[in-house]
Image 1 (cartoon, rainbow, N blue to C red):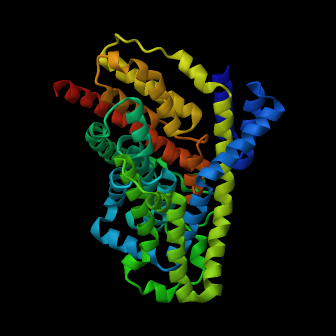
Image 2: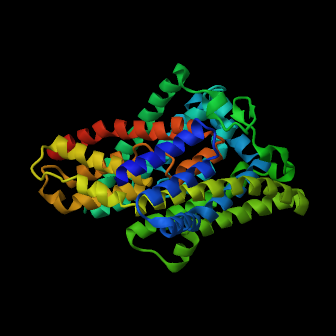
Image 3: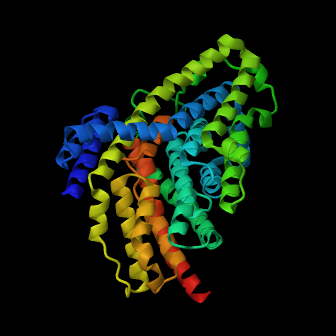
Length: 455
């Protein structure tokens, strides 16, 4: 019954938001209350999971969201994103979605997915008209989504990739050797397929963008465009104005890579923490804009950023509440009991089963990493007795774990709010792109099984 009640809660929340135009915060809280009471948690237990889930997500990503949004507002006031977009438009033009998907999937997997979306979203909004005035933003949104999660599950040191490899006892070097080409190919092929979908009348600006957002030149109007321009700071070299992004990325990536290598230091652990790294980036951005605009000017810029931050934090936290209630409902144990891996199954059956377990777990629980880790935990005890290389099973789990990221994920709500998409628009971009990516990567995993059997 837990599966049925979870499905009712998830589908009910989607129906309330899309069909009845109920605010996402209210819809998600109603889903939490229904699921908690229906699965026997009781009033006290339901409230405990709602508040606990909210607090857990805020502890994990609250500061990241706040710092990231404020950095974006300050960078925008210096014209940084506009200059970057101008360079990209001249260099890659309409190929920007492919460049973004490829970069996110191969270069930035060491960066937390929440940091990636916070830093990439403003650039996607700014560059949308240069890509395509009609479908530029949804195409970039889909490319961002699949780029981030292809790297997250396939490319070391992505968190999910490292966790899957560890649980399946696959050397990180071996996992990277197979996962890197699969992750890159998945990101690029999915970006192409998603564009083909968009060119066939799939996108509707009236319903797929946030109805409270005013569209200008095919992209959402950003409140930070109404604040003062930091002209002196805007005259600085572009690389200086990009330091608020570059410094955190370098610190986080360095700490992650050194940690994987097993040779870290307390100073690097501190500076490489995502919260500290982004705070340093915020300090750099603040200093540049303060030098240009003074105390009052930088205050106006930050004020616009704080307005956006509050909305994102609330809906993200409630998304975390729903995830916590689903996890406490017993869904994970119920799903685990439904699957039993046949040790003597053919290679293709083992791969498909691993993919399916991860896909169902992710869809139900709402976390790519938790779905992948749980699936690996179910399969790893008998992995050695299967007739397929453990790295292939690990890759199949990674592939399935991307499937259908939706409303029970806090990332979904961060993505939606940062890109000014409606819930329907986020389902049509992030959910569809990750589902496509899970399907696209599956035959690549099957191909990897052939390669591994030859080697």
